[in-house]
Length: 71
Image (cartoon, rainbow, N blue to C red; front, side, top):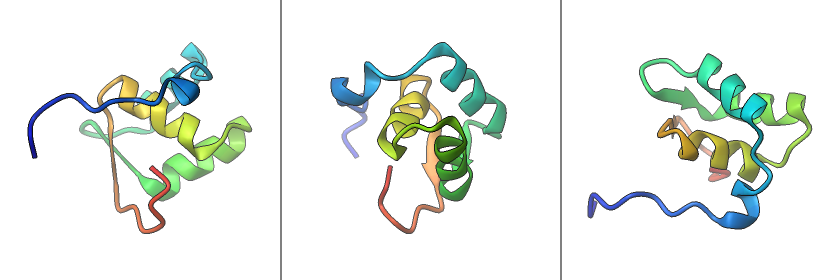
């Protein structure tokens, strides 16, 4: 890895709300959230997976155990 910050697609970042960021933070543990938890949060929040992923990326939360490649 190059150590450079992750680039977040502005199309998704523009749709991230403060409420979504707080919801992602609430689900994260030790700076990480699992893919199934983030997918469920996206579905419950009625946002695309990419928007939920952008919310996590925007605050430095890593998505792990991702089998589908959504994030």
